Every structure is written in structure tokens, then in C-alpha cells.
Image (spheres, rainbow, N blue to C red):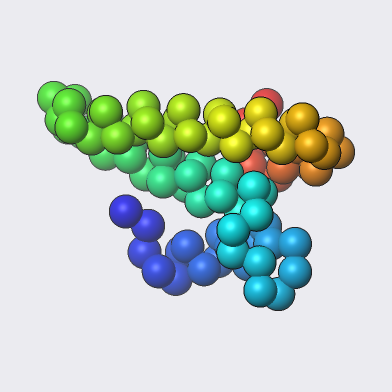
Length: 87
């Protein structure tokens, strides 16, 4: 789970305007941070299958958001991929 300050920093870095908290870019970046934290948790606790299931669900959700963003605005998609270092 992301700490509140870390989540706010991720939102501030990727938001479109001052009150943006739910755009695709913000959601993908938050999901990416959660995925990174959970992946590091699973390296230590490799038998934690409940967390593994949550990780798989988050990866699928991020993939859906990225497909939507790619379909709607390819330039924002490319910029986001570079910013969060996915591609």
C-alpha cells in the first residue's frame, strides 16, 4: 500500500491540471508504484499467494488503462511510457 505522501507526489508529478486525481495518466502511475512495491514484497515473501493475486489484478488493470490511453491519445501514451519507464 502506498503511503499518502508518496501517492500525493506521484499524483502531482503526473496530473494534467491542479485538481486532476483520476485521469488515465495518474491512475497508471499510481498503479505502477503499487506494482513496484508489491513486487519487492513478493521477492521477500514468495509464498504470499494472496498478494500475488492482487499484483496480477493490478497489472491487468494498468494494462487496460494503458490500452485506453493509447487508443484515445497516442502522444500522451508515449510520454507516459517514457516517464514511468515501462517501455
